[in-house]
Amino acid sequence: MDRVTIYRALDRLTEEGEIHKITGVEGVVQYALCVNCNSNHDHRHDHIHFHCTRCKRVICIENVAPQFSLPQGYQVSETQFMVTGICAECSKND
Image (cartoon, rainbow, N blue to C red; front, top):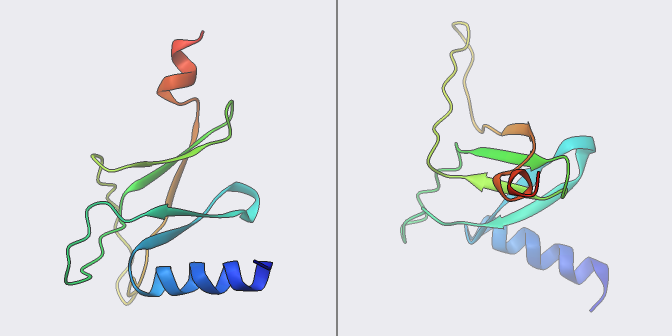
């Protein structure tokens, strides 16, 4: 398969709600499977993404709901939360 075919497949899976895009540090785009989305394609990706500076993985943290407030007049269409540090797996090796 060539690169264009792979990106088309990723775009289609994103549109169909099977995966979601994560724009990580330094603008690198990664993809993750949708876990808590229902069959009606009601997608809730307002969870935290954790970037480990040691192993370089990006992990979806599903059980933490970030909160924020915007000034009046702003309308949110999508959120992405990236937290950077050392993941639990790498912390065990200290």
